[in-house]
Image (cartoon, rainbow, N blue to C red; front, side, top):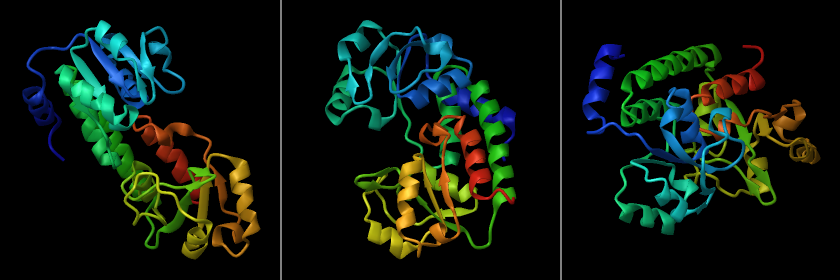
Length: 266
């Protein structure tokens, strides 16, 4: 692991030429990262999707998920945009490119990428030391979780996103990496789409040891197939924490809760 002083120096060198003062976040997870970095004072607008952090409740909105209010965005005169590509439609992403506003694009596919992007965002904000400190703390906690929950034979897990139609997460989605930290493996890790549609037959064929979902009714529906290992072993588990859906620093806490849920014996 590189020394903290060297990480701060490298980030400072690679940071923006001038300190930013007016930042617009175009994803709730990115807004959360700015708050975690103690830099909410730089935010002048956010894209809404769900409940905001308390510190941002009075900030102007620049639209909702998939529906960016370009006129409102321009009125805020941002000198930095934080963008998660999925939060803005393709046509509006092209519009943003033509505006020539400095933009940092974040789309982590693993928890390690997430920690690196937290460092990079801190650098973009002109506060690199905060990113290094937070990222180092998160990496230490991840290493501890990996050691605690490691298994020679990973648990086979089906992570259900929705039921009609049936959706899961693919191997390149960050939730798959969270499962691996917990000593588990996504049974659909071979699929490349972030949220692929699958069939009940495909789930039955892959015979997961654990089925996870955020809705109890969706879990109960699997009891119609007692031949599935997860059903036979009573491993239909409710994921109550929505933190896994927001790739910010708090996702490490959500991952720890996930590990405890699927492997309480560890």
